Length: 166
Image 1: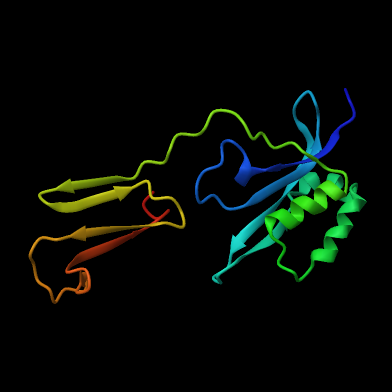
Image 2: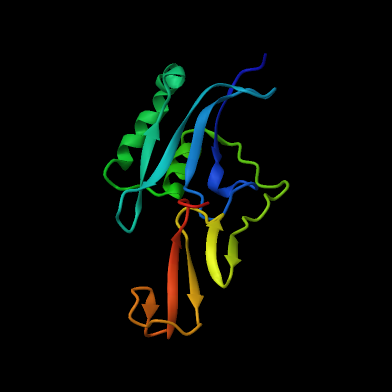
């Protein structure tokens, strides 16, 4: 077996990335024959502000691999700076990690949003990605005192949240 490679994968930039996918970088010791000795992630989480924040996440089976990479202690220089994805990538490359991201390959199928209408009424909505909303506008005449009525648009608007039905 060959010497493992200290590397990383940038999931949000890989050929299989989907629109709206949260940013995530997997870091680990990878084998050229495939597989890994262990890996862990830096994931960006939306915590209710206008910006997402990076968090290091390590399952216990990868603790040894993480602690065997002392060069990652340099990540502490980014503490409190709300580092973005590119800052982490630049740090990893400067620390000698190899970008193993697959940038080319088959593209994933586009997400499909399905709106089921029966008798002129929306019955079901599926496939809305997390972080997106679908606004259904109904321009038929009706009771303009209902809360869904939007006087600016002159129609009824129903909002479906991404992930809840999809």
